[in-house]
Length: 478
Image (cartoon, rainbow, N blue to C red):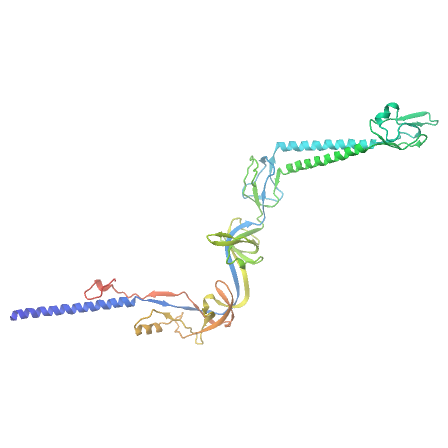
């Protein structure tokens, strides 16, 4: 019996030792679990930077990107059909104002021009003949003398009286009037006026008769109209021939070359575009939210990525009244001129900054310094001790010790101990992407606090999850 009790006694000690160990392990595991579950908390810290209230020039801008283009450009067309000849340019080469770009060869056109010229010349000859006939209606005395006889009267038809008489009249000359000269009939016509009578003395060149000139006058009028029409036709042919010589009206560079020597002229498209590179512009799309700020005449700054050492200036010259919509975003094209566009090339991408409003020598603070509350605006101003109210925010805990730790864990950028600053109401004016004007509430050189981007950290104690599932500890990983 004593042996049995001794064995039980020894086993009891072992059981007790095992129980103590189990309790210890369980308690330790639970402690580790609690440490893990309570220490892995996120601490969010608000930090501030200090900024002086300063006077500055405040500008509001609108930024956009566009493509550089020429201000002046012309498309060269050919109104004539023919073969292109004498074209000595290639894409990108320079052409001067008045220089011949090419000629258009058309043999038929040359023949038509020659025919029109000949027709005009013939009509002019016909007019000369009619005008000479107009002179012939006046029948004049060939010599000095005396009128012996007159055989026609006003209204007589030459064709009717001509067979009966040897002339229209007879003039005598000489000392005794012994020499007689007959005045011959014209080929046709009617006698309109008779200016002599028998017995009259007459001088050489004096008008004796006038024939009816109405038909001749009508013929002259008709011929002059024909000459005008022929001249117009010739002018058209000559202009068409002149259009066969294609001349550039401006100086510039060759762009969009669509032909080569030997090609037949295109009917519906330009042969080439000439772009004046002495004046350039950039067209930028401006968002509909900003377009109302843009006005003609506003100054701009223009930069090109490939030209890093130079910034160009320009002016808003044109604002499109029609928008373009893509992916539910509407933009309006704004045309900006470029001053002195040296080194720039057509087609380059340019970043344009349009100055839409500007104020000089105004008090301003960083935009992030402004706090809004109940419709009013405030800034945090440094107190007399040089500190500011800056708190480290920490999630709430049931432990009063943890709460006290959070209160003590306040900080100021620069590791200064913090004491409360003060919020000051301000009135604001113009603002841009980074700064805002202060119209009242602050004075120059006051220090305001600018909240920095919020940072967060996890207090992860280097704790193993449950110690591998020892006895007595709470379940881990749940």
